[in-house]
Amino acid sequence: MRYPNLPSLQTERLLTTAFRGYRHTLEEADGCFFDTQNLTTERYPLLSTREKRGVVRTLTNPGGLLEKDALAFVAGGTLYYNGLATAVTGLSSGEKQLVSMGAYLCIFPDKVYFNTADSTDYGSMEASYTSSGIVEYSLCRADGTDYESVERGPEEPASSSVEVWISTAGGTSVAMSYSAASGGWVELGSVYTKLTFRSMGQVPRLFKEGDGVSISGANFADANGEKILTAVGGEENSANDFIVVVGLLEDDMTQSTAVTIERRVPDLDFVCEAQNRLWGCFYGAGETENLNEIYCCALGDFKNWRQYRGLSTDSWTASVGSDGPWTGAVNYLGYPTFFKENRIHQVAVSSVGAHQIQETVCRGVQRGSHKSLCVVNETLYYKSREDVCAWQGGFPQSVSEALGEERYFDAAAGAFAGRYYISMRDADSAWHLFVYDLNRGLWCREDTLHALCFARVDSELYAVDAESGALLALRGTEGALEEDFDWYAETAVQTWEVPDRKYLSRYDIRLKLGEGASVSVLLEYDSSGVWVESGSITRQGLGSALLPIRPRRCDHLRMRLEGHGEAQLLSIARVLEVGSDI
Image (cartoon, rainbow, N blue to C red; front, side, top):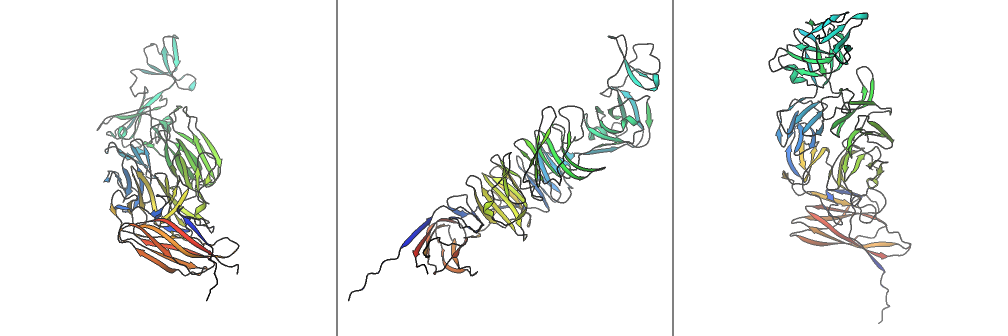
């Protein structure tokens, strides 16, 4: 008997060897996964499990992280540096902004500083002193030294040796000194008054020459208001401490009522350091009016924000016309840069003090996502209301198409080795840690970590888990390493765009598994919502493994790889067979 020859079915083999991470869109993309957990594109073209994290310590009421020569963080109201508690304690509860300026570490909103090079140098940026006892007023030189002879009256002194003549002619007091060059009495350009206190060394401990202060309560009117201290003097346990301010004192006087001296730092929404100054912004109600301003401290002096002497090193304040609260601040390429949700304001710093604000109307930082601002490879990345943006000084460009249409909020970010780590919550308040590989333009979702903040020191990226308070070393270079973890990678709906029907006859999945690692393959057919386990393997030794899977015929399907332990996905081969057009 002869049997007819049957033609073999036409087959096609599709091989994927480059895996491009997370792509949460309905569009099918070869090598991409609709959802991932605990995987990374760091070993591209392979898709592999992420590094094990180390738990360095558990923090009580964590407040923030900062990278300097060593890691700094706030926990339980105390500042820690290089793993040790500092003398900076009693900080208010809540999140902090930690800003580095030289060897100093500045903490906002508490307005406290700490010198990392000298642990005995710390305290408040602000200062206040209220006198108790007699306050004496006298005319003096700018450095606080007294004049030996002062005369007052409408007539010129008989002797030219008189150092200062207070002329009262015409009903107005004018300070004069004798000029041998002109052969007569000429008006002094500046006149100074000294206020002497019984402060037992408090005044010179709190204030220094050049401080911009506010003085109130002085019986001598010219001493009240915003003043620059031209001199501060006194010694420890001294009963004769003094300050010197500009002002013409007509006659020596005393008072027993209190005089208050204050050096203030403005309330700031966000702060950054740039060009040896701290820069900050504030939007809201001030003491007398609503404010929408950008500030900077005096050059090299984070304690002085009201030092106005007409010098290029002075403090600076500017009002801004754009509406809405500030949403973030960062030093980008040496320029202090401030954000609103629909604006970017960058300050062009001038060497002569004539700073200017440049405004760009564009996507800014989303409110609540100020900690997403991060410079990676000279490009600034941040979370806007709609997407994750990359900015290089022009208009921002979106880099988050792969994240799909899901909305995210309250982002915090860090950077390591050309990768941007961003933790944010979705509309259902579920948290996600995503990693963007800048060099390859690839995203991957790592897990559900709610990171309060990030900081990189040397070869480690640290993060604080907001849920547990754990200080995590994400690269695992220190701390107690976590155990082997579960992972998964789930594809979008897979179809095959051909005129005749094709169906998938086999998957050949090649993986490299660690000792004792396991992997399972689950398939969902025709959007049924049911995952069917279709194969699994457990590796007893290091090496690669081939996992063949034979799915049943369907119109479309999704595949989910689930595993436990170390794994690397090497390739996925799909064998397609042609069916009829029915």
